[in-house]
Picture 1 (tube, one colour):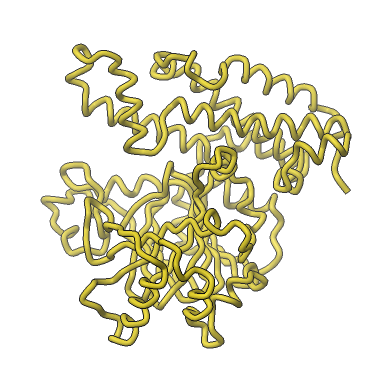
Picture 2 (cartoon, helix red, strand yellow):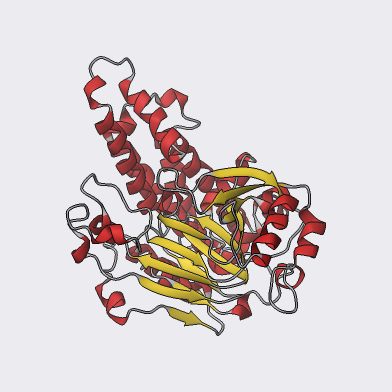
Length: 431
């Protein structure tokens, strides 16, 4: 990202997010088939939070598109078994409902492939139901496979950067499912972005822009499990349905990549036997959406146990524990997340300023180098903004700050000093 783009975007991200009315009136998504600069993607899709589709040209050199797929465009079961035969994988039953999701079991990969073959031979049916291998951390389990490359458009990924630092988890997944498998209505974890690439097969996506999901809630405030269910026509149960827009329906072909923006609820169907690769990711463009999501989650927890506020010791801390159990993160870990992101970028900018190539190679990741110093400066401004929000937040003030991995006020000043020291300098770029 160049300097002008960075300065323009720094001001844009502080503005209220664009209305979706103009986008919705056209009722389509851009199809990207030609070269696109990162800066243009950043300003046209990331900041305004709009979906788009990339053509198969952006995945044509991926190894998995050759090795995992037959000449007929079907899943190459033989090759997949050679690579992953004994690997335990998570498998959901699309015919069963558990709360608003599908129950999962873990089974050997070879057992799932055996099921899948029989399912196809039986006309895409089975007494076992429709099973769907999903949320498999293939990249984490097989780090040396390198069967695909994350496109640069999705490379500013704070979420996986943080989890990679902890070496605990990640949000990079492989999905494999027969024709008819599907994922119920939902928005992605922490209201993150997601991108999904079809290695083979076809998908149908039903997408609703942020806010529309509120018209789909029942009288108890619950979201539907299936937005296509006849149950939604019951006006007594879903009184606001008529106010909801029609979903954006997108057909994704083999090789194509869809960008799903933050907070867009969606439901997805496999129209054919399909393999896909999916990442959830966050960065400076949608960190404010994550922060709002966390505040909403904590508020919901507080309302649920409000009656014990005055009788329970450490009520506020209990709320954080419950929040983490429900959503996967609490305020303390969110602060640690911001700390890791900030430290990596401060090290990067300090190395850029010094022009010391030895220091540079020691501290900088390939992604930060590719995106450049102005992107890191933008990231730091966004982190600083969220830390300022944390320090003003009453629930955050009530936490035991001695338990944090850093002091937010100190980190905020370090960020400001780093930005100030690099402002106006000729920053070093690698050859």
